Amino acid sequence: MSLDKLFGIYTISFLAVTILIGIGEIFFGLPNRWIGWIFMALSLAIYVFIGIVTRTSNPDQYYVAGRGVPAFYNGMATGSDWMSAASFISMGGALSAQGFAGLAYVMGWTGGYLLLAVFLGPYLRQFGAYTIPDFLGARYGGNAARVIGVIAAIACSFTYLIAQVTGVGLIVSRFIGLDFNVGVFVGLLGVLFCSVLGGMRSVTWTQVAQYIILIISYLVPVVYLSWQVFSIPIPELTYGQLLQRNNSSAIQITRDAKEKETRALWKKDADEASEKLKDPALSEADRAKLTAARTTALAQARPPAPGEDAKFGYYLTVPSGVGMWNFLALTFCLMVGTAGLPHILTRYYTTPSVRQARTSVAWSLFFIFLLYFTAPAYAAFARFAIYAKLVGSKVAELPRWVTLWKPAGLFDVIDKNGDGVIQWADFVVKSTDFVVLATPEIAGLPFVITGLVMAGGLAAALSTADGLLLTIANAISHDLYYNVIDPSASLAKRLTITKVLLIVTALVSAWVATFRLSLIVELVAWAFSLAGASFFPALVMGIWWKRANKAGAVVGMIVGLGVTTFYMIGSRFYGLQWFGTLTIASAIFGLPAGFLTIWIVSLLTAPPPKTVQDLVVSVRYPKSGQATARSAQGIGLGQH
Image 1 (cartoon, rainbow, N blue to C red):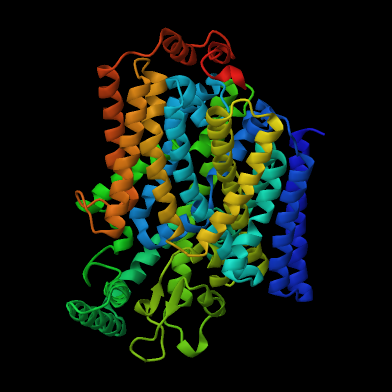
Image 2: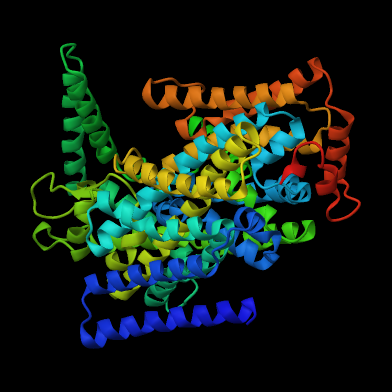
């Protein structure tokens, strides 16, 4: 059976099952918890089944899916690999809270694929390696660049992985009632089945199946809402009107007397906390608690518009000054981070040819576009639903979604002035990660839609976790152990080490996720900064400048990664600030430092051997589709 027919039947079957569950809910009163369990069990069963059917021990199949994935399906798998918990769960929430400023995520993540298509993707496929450290080792010679590549790959992939696992725990805990700390381990079972049994081959076809689920589940609720509010099922065409309504609500709330009274009480709390913080005898724990309380109070005391006469709320205001600097810096970091993430770059090794790799980038952009073009609409509908259905309701009659989601700890409702009515300033948002997952319930849609969104969020988190786990395991087993420590290791031994590492990495990431270190989207932004500063300069100059040599690449990667990590830790935990730059844009300093260092050190040291320079030329100007694989013989790749 052809792939088109197979996945066509799969898509129709998934929709049919969703409709049947909806009929069960509406006509037979199927309980919500059962719906959650059905979607959860169905999703994991599909992923486990694909893992079993596509299991393999062939190294080409295990590491690069046999280099036989057609461009269309590789684009779909890349889209799924790319659209993580951050894209699915957090981006809509970030846009809903930050408004215009949140567009940096959409622009940065989408723009990164243009960099990938122009500077890296096709050329890496032409090179014909297994992993990104493989490319670094062969291009720059020796193991130094490879080992630094391994360290950087683990650093950015593990940070990214924790965010995905956090998303998995959030979904599982809310929809099937498991404790968050248990849910993170349960959710990873499906991932492990795929990646352990079949490596990249299983992960690829699982990601295609996951893309179909996640895009359907992302589009259905917002299309339903658009039809419900405007009788037009195209939210991208209707949400502009909602922005105007939301802006009117923001200005009205700014002027409302009860809202002013509530904000004044929050301001009083912030002032009291500031006074207490002046006490030098405070313990560190009390100081941290007071600082957090002051931050929350200040946020709640801020009106949604700059003033009563303002025409636009903060939500629709274009950032200026330092705000614009951070907007541009974050966009830039997300772009270069996208083009430098190892688990995304590896996907272009799996296509049959360079032409297919290039076509695959275009398909990736299309499949990602479907979600990103809809995210601003999602944000507008979610904000509208909160204005319309929460603000002004009675505390004694809280909407059901509030009582269902409140235990997750993502928001709180505090009747600050004690009038028994919920004001906008009473709604304390601790994390916007609930917005997309809870929107169907906020809007009063049937629970089957909520279950569908849960399945999509789970697919998004697991699909990215698949690729990240494989990247980390391969970096250690293939790049570090096989290529550096024991080049004579048998295939069976290498695959066994890879599988053990997959399980260990999954368990460690789940354990770390139980600490709930930060917001999903912030963790992801950290990963992008690390990837952009460490990989992007070495990869781009390795392909486009044949004079770049080992010394330049090694020192440049260390400097890029070091400067970024220094600023990231310093600004996040020790109050360091350069030009007012936020932590999530740390690569704005590390990336230029990396480029500059590679350039200077390469010019100050001996040029690379002629074979390497010829290899660089052959990557950019191939005489045939496999010219580079042959050129690479003798400088590292012949051993595969």
